[in-house]
Image (cartoon, rainbow, N blue to C red; front, side, top):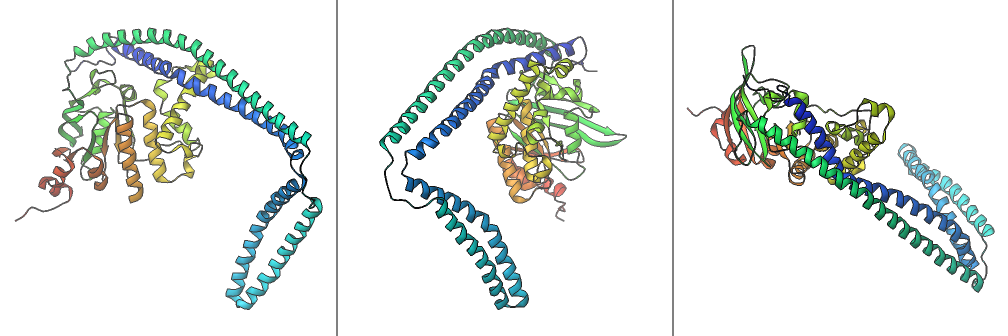
Length: 477
C-alpha cells in the first residue's frame, strides 16, 4: 500500500500551506502590473473628462472665429444628413412593398406605388431643406473678426497647457505610487519566496521517501494502470509516457477506455492497480493516486469534459474567473465584509481573464452570456478558462465534438497557441482523426483498455493493428 503523501503524516497540511503561499507569491509578482493598469484606466478617465470640458469651452469660441457662411453651411449639412438617415428605413420599406405589389399585381402597380410613396418622401425632404435655409440662411462670405480668432487661438493654447500639466501631474503621481508600492512588493516577495522555498524543500524530502522518479523531459508516466468495474476491464494494464511540451493524443473505438483513463488521472476514479506519476509545477514527482480529485488542480492539471460546463447566467468573463478559484486566498469573512483583499483578488483575476481572452482573440465576447454564442466559440472559451489556473498539463476530452470543419480548424490553432504561448502540455482524447493527426506530436491507440501502438501520427496511421481495431478492417486471408 503506497504512502499517501497528500493526507498522511501532516504532508497534506504542508501542501495546502505551500499552495496558499504560491498563490500569494503569484499575485504579489503581478501586483504592480495590475496596479499600473488600474492607475492608467483612472488617469485616462481624468484626461477624457478634461477633453470633454475643453470641447465645451472651445466650441462656442470656434463658431465665433469661423465665418458665418461656413458655420451655417456645416450646420445645414449635419442636420440634412441626420434627416436623410431617418428616411432610409421608410424608403427601404417602400421598395420592399413595391416589389411585393409588382409580384402580385404586375410591374405597373408596383411602379405606381413606388412613385407615389417616394414622391411623398421627396416632398418632405424638400420641405426640410427649405426649412434649413430659413434657419441657417446663406450669407455673404466674410472673415470672422480678428478679436474672435485671437480669443479662440488663445483658448486652444490654454487648453493644451492644461492637458500637458495634467499629464505631467498624473505621470508624477503614478511614478511615486509605483515606487512606494514596489518597495513593499519587493519586501513581501523576498518573504514569500523564502517561505515557498522552505516548504518545497520540506516537501521534497517527503516526496523523495516515496521513491517516485521520472526521466528528464517527461511530465507524466503511466505504469500498469488498470481500472475494473465488477469484472469489466475498462483499462487493462496500460503504460506510456508523456513528454513535457507535447500534444499527446489518445485514440480508440467507442468504449476503448479513453475517458475512464482520464478519470483515473484526475482521480474521479481510483485505479484498481498501477501508478500515475506526474511532475508538478514545483518539479516534484508525485503519485496522483495519493490525491483526492478536488486537489489535483493544485498540481497544475486541469481538464475539460465532453459536454460544455459553462455557467449560462453569467458572462463569459465571469465564467473564466471561476477557473482561478484555486488561487483565491479570501475566506468567508472576506466575502461577507467585501474586504480590500477580496476586491484586489477579483481585480487581479479579472485582469488575468481579460489578458487570456485577448491573447486567444476572444476579447470581443467578454460581456456575452454563453447562451448567445455559437458552440465553436464556447469550446474555445472553455479552453481559455483552463488557463486561469496556470496549468502545466491540460486534459481535453473530445474537444472537437459537435464542431464543423471550419470550427475544428480554428480549434486546432487555439490548441497549438496554448501549447506554445502558455508553455502547456496537452493530452487529448478525440474521434476526429483529422484533428488528431494534424495537431498531435505523439498518438497512443488503445482498444478494450489495452495499448495497441504508440508513435508519431504517421506511424499510427500506417500501423496495421491500429487499422484493424480502429477502422474495423479484416485481416487478409
